[in-house]
Length: 338
Image (cartoon, rainbow, N blue to C red; front, side, top):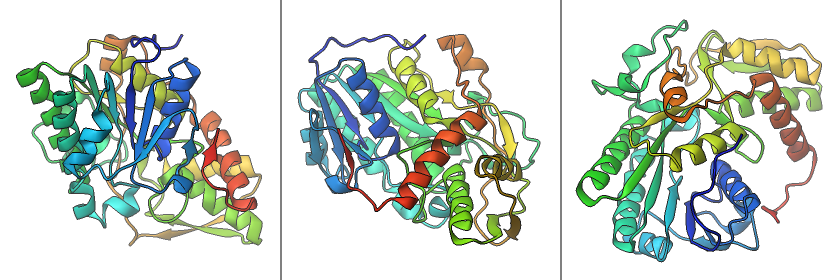
């Protein structure tokens, strides 16, 4: 069963961060549902968008500027704000200023949305809002929504997201604009970053294993000791959860993430199983590692939405691996235009 529609065909839906991973998949889903009034906004040049659709109003705007946000929100009924300067742990641990400056995007977008009469506004938050002292063990207790306070989130990126959550709350309290907040947990899948420093662990491990196979090497580098734990959510679940939350009456932040906990070593095992190889592992203990353990407590999302992410990591990794193989063995195409 999938999320039901709320806005009639032709009423404008805006998706920011549209040239990125989650944004591209969200627009694909909205189009598949029959929505025709869609505006896609991103800073990246069009030929760098992961997915681009000719029947959508595609705009290239710098949403750190207030006037760009006003242009993006003009005439909109709903806004999905997915725009942010972010990446995997290798990026957010070394680019804290860039991550925090994304506060300008959400701030200007909220102001522009309220002025434009937007009825619903979605903000993509992150599990990085959770306090580090609750994530010091690989055998981590799953994080429930109330664990964000007392606040001590991931430095840089986590603080920006937590501030963004509070701002959404106050825009509802002060102006009556309906806001929805999802705390995403490690989203992965096809049509996303897999190289260049912004990629997350599933895509990075797939790329490393594929590279070793293509180059005839028998080893790969693993960041950390491989025993740190995470849960990883497949993109289809992310989009389903996003739409269910946006179309619900839930105003408080909700975890949107898998609760299937694995070590990084187990993640590598799965990718090796897909590729049919066994590789030696070189553990780089000086590389960015993030928290020791993190998992999603899905009690509240099940109570409030009657649903939770369910795609197994093994299933999602197969689709991700196959897509990355295609990208690495085919000359880089421009953005997938449909």
